[in-house]
Image (tube, rainbow, N blue to C red; front, side):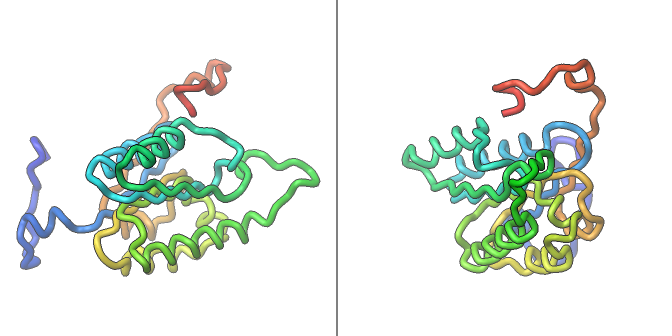
Amino acid sequence: MPQGQVTTVPQDGLTTRQRRRQAVLAVHTGHGKGKSTAAFGMALRAWSAGWPIGVFQFVKSEKWRVGEEAALKALGQAGGPGVAWHKMGEGWSWIQRAGTERDHAAEAAEGWAQIKRDLAAETHKFYVLDEFTYPMKWGWVDVADVVATLADRPGTQHVVITGRDAHPDLLAAADLVTEMTKVKHPMDAGRKGQQGIEW
């Protein structure tokens, strides 16, 4: 696809402009770093285009402060389109402290139910479903329901889903799939995450 040229033109009766304005379902998966970072980069473009943004984080705790959240919320308060930020869980894919277990499956299901309500109401124009592959992988959210709901979403609502091990049915339904592959990471040398790089 050199210089942004398409390789085929479908015989679907649509004009180039109509095809250009179709809703996109993107999936960022794989074991490399950068899946969420790329999704938030797309969210910045969406904000610049004047689109209301909904962010739903399924694995990162509401106690964690991530740079993307601060930046997008500041942009949302600066007179541009709004940015709604929702966090479900408490870092539960990595942290399980005895005596503090929450019903993470129920929280994930409620998060998905809220996304379905927002899609039906066309609340946002751009959605980031961060780490959403995990609730599907663990059986907390039905993959067939996700695929069907996203296929039938009204209007022009763009959705990007991040996380490792994306389900094959989700990949088949997506318009854009990117797999991040790890070649090298500072953690391999014993270096933990740092502010400005990981959050």
